[in-house]
Amino acid sequence: MKLVGIAGSIGEQSYNRDLLKFIAKKYAGLAEIELVDISDLPVFNPDKDQSESPEVQRVYQKIASAQGVILATPEHNHTVPAAMKNMIEWLSYNLHPFEGKPVWIVGASYHSQGSARAQLHLKQILESPGINAVVMPGDEFLLSNAKEAFDAEGNLKDARTIGFLEKLLHKFLKYVKVIDLFDAPDTMTADDEDLEAKGKVNTTIEGVDMNDDEWVEKAAVRVHAVDGSTYVKLDRGILTVDQLNYFLNTMPVELTYADDNNQFIYYNKNTPTAKMLAPRRPGQAGDPLSSVHPDRAVKHVKQVIHALRTGDSDLVAMPVPGNGPDKHIMHYYKGMHDENGRYRGVNEWVVDIMPIIKYYLDSTGQKLVVDENKRPTSPIIGLDAVTGASSHGSSASAAPQADASTGASESDATPAAPAVEQAPVADEGGIEIGDLLNSGNNTATEGIQPKEVTETPKAAPKPSTPAAAKPEVDASTGASES
Image (spheres, rainbow, N blue to C red):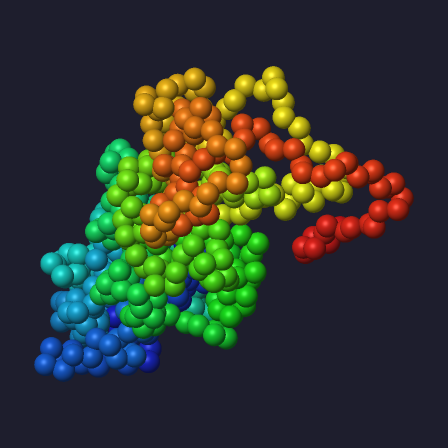
């Protein structure tokens, strides 16, 4: 969990800063707590708005990107110090990073009060309209006689004080998780899915038109996004932004990211639009999902997203029909969740699996044949529990028509002439794949792949290569040692 800690005192010697340093060091295994300095913020003056200044933006970005905030306040004249109030003024004028943000107030003082009155006042300030922080209620941490509370290494000396502090920190970490769930879109049914992305989540970039073709460039400026050779710490590694792009753009699949606010925010742009299996164009990044799907597909898109959001399905997959025996394009939709289990969007990848199948057949000397005894089943994976799609024999009129295209295909393109024998899609399992799968620019939107796999079109099977003559392929290209 990522938190920021801010001390209200900007003096060279600050026991509130010492308290935050102690918390960050001692509980580094529980949370990543970054101390943010506010000493260089300009004095708030609404007539000279400096919301976009580097100093204000630095603090704003730190708070906005954190999951929770710990504020340590001293007490000056029975209230919060001027530096703390000045920060709050800037961050409640044109910028509002505290809105919906979990906050834990702690405090240290020279004397016995422990900043009790300042903490109470700060709580009232943070709950004001325009700030709307979510301050943790309950027990207060008041460190009195702070001058005597720390040892030479900056550690709190009293075991009971440490125990109480640890108890409250654990409570705050749970509190952050609970508040985070309140931020998540609450969709009771698939119809509640907002494909226009009118709401917002804690990663939504505000102030930029989602349909703007330059959304990426403008949103990057808005949030001061890093690029180029700047390092980014990932879950298990560190890459520069350039390296991350190299990595994603060489994936052998087309990737799309639609967030939990149903906004299409990324695809790995490694192929010209016209050559993509599921064409996207650069100007679509940032669009709400309603802008990248035709009206007829909306109902089905909602069904798929809702199934992934609620956990009714973890993975949805379906083929694009009508591409002939040499191409079998699959769309996969995987629900993404954060460390707290909260749904964070759809990971869509599109891939032609025929090269893999052909490689396997060629390398093993096998071939594909039609199983005359195989009962037809739905080619759609992952929507059975939601739509009953795999119930063989259901009529097309009775079957739900789910559209699994959560990506960014833009137009309702004219379907390409199918290269294989056509069969009514509904015969496959009651699902109108051609209608539900594609929002537009896939290679084909009508027709269906054969019920079973198609025999590999070759004159005769190749004899199997003796094992001894085969080149030895070492598939271990990763970092495993043994």
